Amino acid sequence: MKIYAEKDTKIERILGKEIVVFGYGSQGRAQALNARDSGAKKIRIALPDSSNSREKALADGFEVFSPLDGAKNAEIAILLTPDETHGALYQEILEKYLPFAAVIGFAHGFCLHFGQISLRPDLSSFLVAPKGPGYLLRKLYQENEGLMARIAVWPEGEKEKIQSAFETALDWASLIGCARIGLLETDFGQETESNLFGEQAILCGGAAALVRTGFEVMVENGISEEMAYLESAHSLKIIADLIYKEGLEGTNKLISKTASYGGYVGEEAYQASEMKQVMRRLMQEIKSGKFAAQFQREQAHSYPLMRQKEVLASQEKLTKIGQKIRNWLFGKGIKKEERP
Image (cartoon, rainbow, N blue to C red; front, top):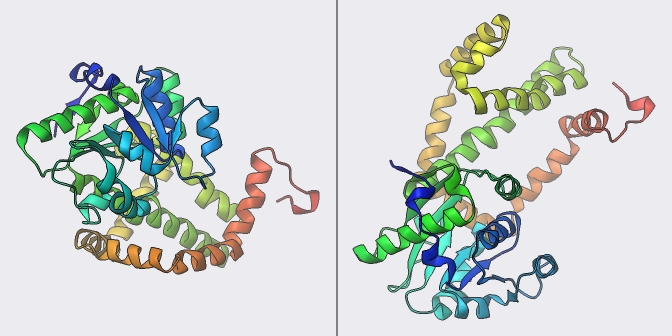
């Protein structure tokens, strides 16, 4: 896969185009502000009348359209609403009202990869997926830095249309500051599947399972809840930051011999368990579309599993002790009788 940089972009190709950003949450606000600061003056925001973000977008100096009017005016439509809204937004508005040969930009490939959207034949689509949250994208941009991004184009269409969409991806990524660091060329499928797998097996599901189970085992063996929290949830950031900067090998060279040796022992124990089989099952369910179908059913029924898990999490010891520890550590104060 190829990595592109600012020298490979020509933002002049899109500076004069009518760009409409749908959504003004974390990514929507950051990308719209960055693009405007890079010289794109014809950027507008599309939000429903009921959106809580309308006042913020207006205060930031943007003209705000309804989604329908935004679609009618967009040469480039950037979809930065939540993934679960894309299907309805496209089918009810974008498919009907986008101008001929418009381009749709995504930050995640879920809806196209899993067939929730079937593009109108004259439309083209690209993906620019910054590797980080919106607040960080904006902060780094203002510091003349940036976040790397994955870029791709949807594979259907004539060669010239695909090439034009790819150029638009490069230029949009440059406008929002990602080309300062680098743009990794990929495809919608790999971006979607790797992102979902990372969330489920490592970053969200995997990390949560490690923290919860580790906390429980320590408490079962007589370690105080405060110490158990500090050695699980709290300390995870220390190692994550080291891995982020130094990689696994570099991290092992920087930590103590006890920690390094213990890490190897623990890793071997995990490798001997069923962990890899669990990960393979998660990946297969992603690739087969089973997870996407499950998520659609969950959404259709107003997220019953998520609401149940949130209630359970709010009641568990890990949550309560974590709130107390964070208040103590991060300056919010802690009652004398609650101090560890």
